[in-house]
Each structure stands twice: as C-alpha cells, then as structure tokens.
Image 1 (tube, rainbow, N blue to C red):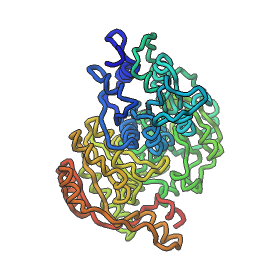
Image 2: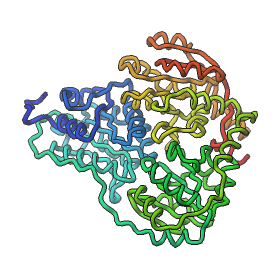
Image 3: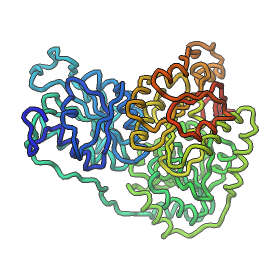
Image 4: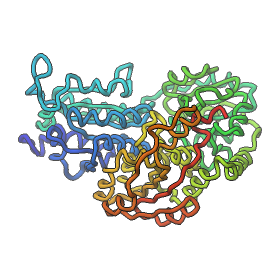
Length: 542
C-alpha cells in the first residue's frame, strides 16, 4: 500500500481493483509507468492480477480479445500521455465493434498542475479524455470518456462504467485519474456495484403486423444477439426461418439445421436472402462490410430488434422496430405471439453446395483448405483470433463455429495488427488460443512474443507469409495501381521463435492439421499467397 493507506482505508487504485474483482474481472492488462504504479502497489488476494505486455496498444487489444470471448468487461491499465495515446487504435476497434473494454489511465498529478492549463509536467496533456471521447460509448448522448480530479469521483465513475459499459448496446470507456489521486487512501463510501439491465416492457404489435401474411422469413443475427443463441434457434424453428449471421455472431445457433454457414457475399446465400418476404434483424447494425455496402437485394419488409436501432435505421428503412435490450425475451415473445411457418428453404443443401463449390474453385480451394484444417483440428473449447489478413478473412468469415464467442474477427474498425496481441486476452483466461495472422500485420506486435513466453500462455501463432501486405497487393492489382509499398522483408521466423524460446513448425496448407493437432504453444508458418475470399470488398462486384 502507499500514501499511508491501511486495510480499512485502501488506496483509490485498490478500491477500483476491488470493484473489478466484484465484477468477475480476474486479469487485467497493463504496463507500469511512473504515474500508475499505485495499481501495482495495490495487487493482492481477491484482486485482479495485471498481466504485463510490451506495448500499451496490446493492453487494449488483449482486453478486447478477452471481452469478446467472455462477454464481460475487460480492463487495460495505462500511464499518462503517450501511454494512454498508444491505446487509441485498439480502443477504436473495440468501440466500433461494441466490445466492453475499460481503459483506466493515470493523468498528470492534480497537485502539480498549473491553474491556467499546461505547465510542462511529464506526460502532461490539456484534456486526455478528449482523445477517447469520439469513440467511447455514448450514454444519453454523453461520451463515456471521463477525466476526474478526486478519489471519490474516480471510484464512483469506475462503478458506473463497470455497470454501464455492459448495458446493451455494449461499448468501450475511458477513465483518467490523476497520478497523485490513485495512490491516496480512499475515505469515501464505496458504491454498490449494480450489474443488471433495467426492465423494458415488450411491445410486439408493430412487428406482428409486419410479419402478418409473410411465409418466407429470414433471420439476421448480429453481434448484439450472441448470448441469445437458444432463443434464436427456437424462433428460427418456429418460423422455419434460415439464420444468417453477421461476422460478430458466428457460432450463434450452431446446432440448428437452419443456420447458414457461408456469408451473404456468396451468390447462393444472397439469392436465398433476396427470396424472403421479410427480414428480422436481431442486434445488428447491418454495416457496410457485412452487406457489401448495402448493395445486397433486401427483402420487401424489414423488422429491426435492437437496444438502440439508430445506426441500423441509417442503413435500411424498416417496416417495424422493436426497441428492447433483451433479444432473447423478444424472440420468445415472437414465438408465443406469431403463428408457425412451413419450411421454404433447404439450408443444409445450400451449405453443402457452397462448400463443395469453394473446394474446387481456383480462387477459393486453397483458402477453404486452410479453413477446413482449422475447423477439423482446433479444439471446440479453444479460441480463434484473426488479424486483418487474407488468411484471417478466410478463417474469420468462413470457418464454421461450434459455439458463439469462439472466434474474434476485427472488422469493426478493421485494425491491422490486431491478431497477435488480441489473442493474449483469451489465452490469459486459460483458453487454448490460435492467432491467425499474415506476415505484415504480425510485425506490428512481435514484442508480445515475450509476453506469451513470460506468462506461459496456451497460445499458438499461425503465420501465413505471402511476402507482404497480400490484401493490399490484391487491391492494387484490381484497381490497376502499380504494386508499391506492399512487398515486405520478413525475419527468419525459425530464428525468431528460437530467440523467444518458442517451438516452431514450418508446414503447408495440406499438413496444417497435423501441426494444429499437437496443440503445442509456439509458431506455425505457412508460406503461400492465398486468393482473397468474396467477403473482401474488391470481389463484391464479381
């Protein structure tokens, strides 16, 4: 403890760790700095551990990976100024994807600040929270990026964010606390930690009217529905409605015969989608990447179910809207209040047809072979984290998932370099984790190999080395641009693995399954240029 803290009066940092523990946070991610050492001073039993990474961006990426795979809030601890600023790219990916990460940073000591603004303190900024405000979750129109000046407010705001970042729709938040406040004894009243959602009455009249007379219903399940898989499966069976998932909802209704396993970017799936009379959207913004920038053929009627349908309504013109924060409750209500429908589509045959075509297509057979090796050989209780890379696009969109929250795909903001550090999150939670990365993106965070070794994480890094930024190279070819800036020098991967004490296997797509079956932490390398899948934008108009 510091600054004369006692067991009866722990520091502000200690009380915040206590609140996180109460919220089932068992591990956080951080780098110690001169201003935030109070968090390390406060470590102890019944408080979360701090897993140390090698770059502040990795604190937020790892928190994002953990949040997406658990559904709980996940925490990054950073220091003032450049430490906080280094998290912004990762914070943006989490924020746009609705991932409930909580960045807590020190700020310049309040006792040494000038009365008229900056005075030249180490790491000082005029308004550190303003970096995060445009991206942070909005609650009642107010950004959840907050700087405080005293310990009581710091603890109160921490409790509020633990509660509110998880409330649908989830999002990312920032709390900045002066360095000298973090280490002060907390003498206020510790707030009660509230975790439940407020009750919202269920009104299905508009939805029922829109569904009346429609026999061909298709369900679109988005990231806001990932924890309501059972209810969605029941609703789908009641309506005999095929289920199409967004990238974030892969694994929803995995056991259903009505789940469409290929993306809407494949022609057979888009044709099925266009044949429907009505589309029921459950917790999805229907963003551009999932819908080919909204150029797909939409059903005549659209019913939106969402806690906040504002973004979705910018993208489509709905027939009916149900505003509700519990999609499972809405799905159960629709089962009870709408008639059953007869089958109108053979989804199993569609899935078989698409996969068979991909296996033999010149542009797709190598990519789908990679996907099938991962499908067949990575354990169902393990996790897969993809980077923005050709191999990641294939895996993140086409790999069939046996359960929700098994795969992480960073298409929210589309941050290259996500995969390696984000996979630290679920691995730190004990899940055998496979990171699927290209050689370009993985170079953003090679220092985190030291984190993997130091923390003895159950972590396998699959690198598909195509000699550079393969997707960008393809973009240049399609657009008729000269190939510039996309060919990269790679390290000797075997020597790199040896330098960090990691196992190393160089293999091929054909033999990838054997390497994955070992489930041995380390690096697996494949040298191949894969053709991008149809889910990538340069192929949308083919």
